[in-house]
Image (tube, rainbow, N blue to C red; front, side):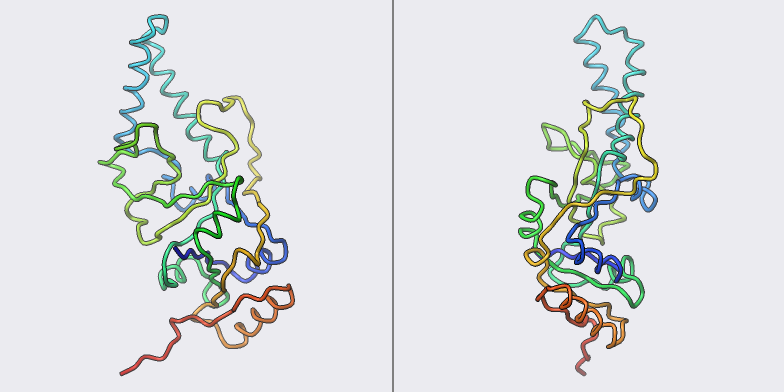
Length: 242
């Protein structure tokens, strides 16, 4: 499987220069999608039933505690946005016109291409990879067919299906073992992890709206930083045949 990351020129140079991949804190991604890391409506009811079952099996828990337990669980779930860090990729055999428009700066952007296997190997032991599943948040559940739960950061609403997203995820803590009194640094936007660029990137493609001089600039900068992978113009610039 080929996977792509669309970045502007500054982020491209930073990636090659530092050989460090950026993971955005999930609550920052929530500015584009407020449902980031949340559960569908059906799973809200599931949460209540879960604690009702616990209370029914544990006589020492007063029935009035159920509502409190549900609120605390929702609070910790929201805080997982601040304990989760995500690197977003596009899974496709071809570059995407939609991704250029969404995530590529008009004519100063670059798509780096690797494979699922190379990304997995490059982040082995430091991040978990998974394809995002797109569901109806009004009528579907994340837990259908799953005996041991689900990772909410690997689900999005069907409105985002065009992204065909693959995510690399780092979680600083796990649900159920978080400290509810923990204070978070609101200035934190993400974290970085080292990767070996020469073993990760197969090629880079410049924006279909960029000019020839920008293609040459990206080639020169890539070579000066010591990398040999190909830098190519976008296939969307190919001449049509009539």
